[in-house]
Amino acid sequence: MEIILKQPVKNLGDTHDVVKVKPGYARNFLIPSGMAVIANESNRKSVAELKRQASHKQDHIKMVAERTATQLASTVIEIETLAGADEKLFGSITTIQIAAKLKDKGFEIDRKIITVDDIRELGEYTAVVHLHKEVKADLKVLVKRKED
Image 1: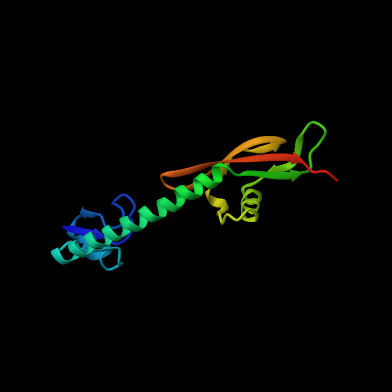
Image 2: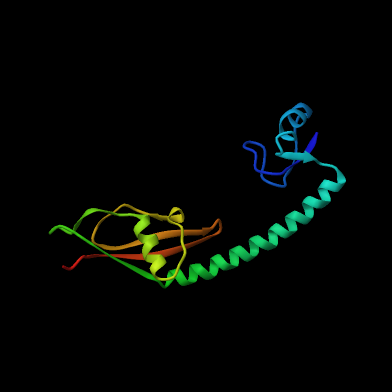
C-alpha cells in the first residue's frame, strides 16, 4: 500500500515522501495517528503543491542564512574573562557567552547552533555557526584577559 507521510517517521521517510508499507501498518498505525494519508491522485497533487511551496520557502531561508553567514565571517567576538598567570582560564568559554556577545552585536543566533572546541586558554579561536543544513559560518572568537 502506498502512503504519503505527513511528518518524518523513523526508518521510513521524511515529510511528503511517498512510501510503500504493509496495509496493516498503514491502516492500524500511520493513518489513525495522523502520520500519513493514502496516496491517491488527489493527495498526490496536494503534496506536489506543498513540496513546491516548501521548496520556495527553503530557498528563501537559505538565502537569508547565506547573507547572515557573510556578515558573521567578518565579525570578531571579544570575550574578556579571568585567567591565571599561565594564561589558563578560570572555567571555560561556552556557547551561551558567544551567543550573548552576538546578540550585543545585533545577531539573533541560538546557542544550540554554535559549535566550538573547548576554550580554556587565552587566545584566538574559531566557532562554527550552523545557520542552515547547507550553510555554515566561521566566527572568530578572541579571548582576552579581563583588566581590573
